[in-house]
Length: 392
Image 1 (cartoon, one colour):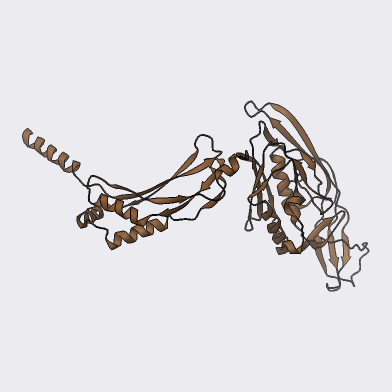
Image 2: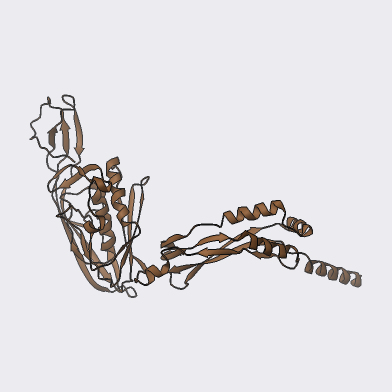
């Protein structure tokens, strides 16, 4: 009995040892990365696993069957791609510049390698043969300019914006989509260029001093505010910044907005990073969310932006009315919501990243005047309110 069991065990072991391996096609590529810390590349692996039974059938055929060739071509189509310029991406809870090389599978060479495996039962893996094409903008573009990490992120909501305002936000934001800045003084107006119809802007509501009116480019301050928040979070010194005359719901939280009005009012920062800056922008109209990110040379300090503190507040003034002949007698329409006046302060702290110890701090103060609710009213309506020509 013992002898029979031993023979059976040996037979099973030998049968297992000489079993043909299932076939798998493996594509493996390394993507250069910058800024993730430990590694200088990301490995991309894709597999096409062929079940054991079908692998055995293909080995008996000892050739590339039409169905196998169709599978290989389908697998290759999922790999082939054009190169894409390098940009920063969120990976492993950090931001790194990822070089998206282009890939083209060499079908003839891969078929040759596959045929060799079909004829050798001891082998199972087939390495896909391909050529790699780097993009025009590689990781070296960022490395040689010292752009290594995310410095700051600005976020704002444009919920409730008109179609014209959204159009202007898109046009303005594109000026910060994959955009390089090299220099000592950043100027928003220089970055966006002329704000006019020729540049793609449309008529929208603009704020000029103490009044609002229709003008080309209304909504551009959504972009300037978001850029301001990004550079403020990046720790750059403010050279020129003016808040809006009154608090606007688009720019919540209050105290972190920046108005521009060409050619007289600009937003400027001093670039103290000793390197270039790189901007990436994204917007989501479904969520009405605009994001501007600034990348550059790592700072020695950690920048912490405190919550806005309202130092003082004044009530909303009495309603204001403007006559609108398009409205029926007695009909009213809200043109512009009112806002309380306020003095708001935001603190920016520079801390030691290891200990959290405060190195220095700065305060940003914004003064907003109170603003009335403004209504349009039919011309025949009785109203003792003073008629004004302001409108959002």
